[in-house]
Image (cartoon, rainbow, N blue to C red; front, side, top):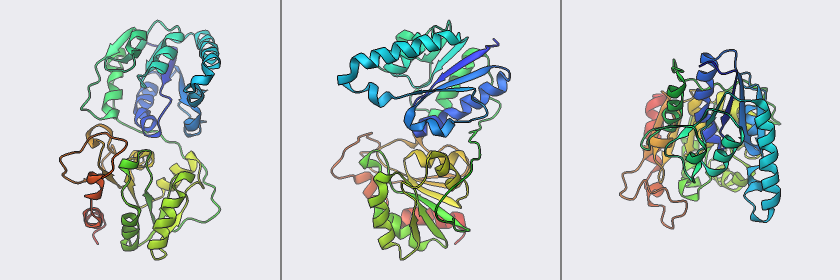
Length: 330
């Protein structure tokens, strides 16, 4: 099979998009002359803008589509998108998202070959012509790469192609620094800010705290307890800037989050603190990754809310520091 035009559907989230990049890399190796397009959510589009392996980005505003009061405009947007996709005449469409919206987009493309996972949710499998068994207790990267077996595209190497961008910051970066990621979409995945501060105090170089503007309060708590060893960049970088800050770091200390996956993808030593989620499925992927978690009966529970947060509270500063200091030979 030599498709002239391929569509990848993976709108979100940040970590999932990072995990999909090896699929993009393998497709480009297998089909060097094919056009590759990607459907991505507006919030994450900047990450892939201008990517040399992607010929066109289709940016969707899926947050608006979730609004039940805008169902008519959502339907209008869906069918308008479908008409434009159909006009592209894709030879191959791959849905890595596996939800109802992505399944419908796959179908509306009109492609004769629409690939998705057998375990995809919300009825999205109905819209595929080819279904691949991905599996559940398998890392997302390895699961996504399984779709390539159905199109005779061998995976020669697992590479996360994140192009280098220009970094513009109001403050100069230290010569050496760690990146701390105290935020996470789920409150249950957040290690206490005071413990991040304790790590920052012990490190032999400065720490830069990254995150969105929603993480500013967490960052201030770390700064106030770090004895001048931490600097906040929360809300001060765009996605490409975030990648470049992490690219230049000595190491990353993070909750289960998008920046954690960026660190692992870039080959930066990444110390990932896990609690309610499974590192087997969505842990940092790479050679220089260190997962730190407590042995608690309740984890992984995959709960977004929990009053006690036993699994994260059980991870001590010493647990994290021993792993970091062993790596740094301190």
